Image 1 (tube, rainbow, N blue to C red):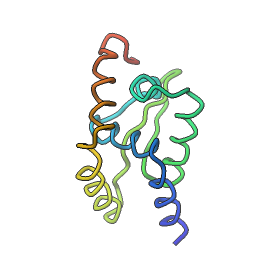
Image 2 (image 1 turned 45 degrees about the horizontal axis):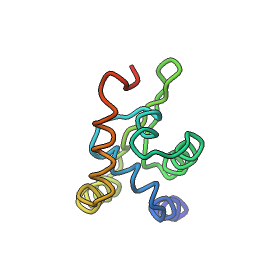
Image 3 (image 1 turned 60 degrees about the vertical axis):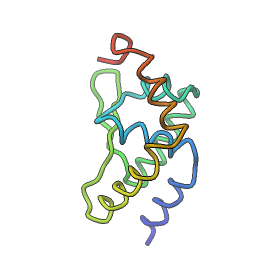
Image 4 (image 1 turned 135 degrees about the vertical axis):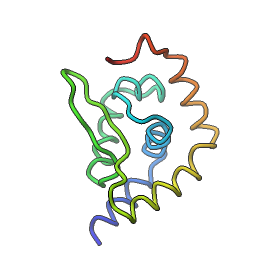
Length: 112
């Protein structure tokens, strides 16, 4: 029950939903890519990613000095939740605008 509560708390914030929508549209993003798309400070993005990680919704991996995040959907109930989030989030105005901002950031500026 505690994990379920963490998931719902994580979903109860607009910034975290925006981050999830970006991650649902991309296979994996670096923190700096998320910062560029959402236009919030690194500390804010990292704090929200921490909530999502603690809730078990995202995976993180370190590659040198960069940390990359991706959607975690390994548990059957989470797969259903992720599917629902895709349907609900990807066509929202803010999600479309965030993806456009990420695209304008350009491949050449993304973390490697």
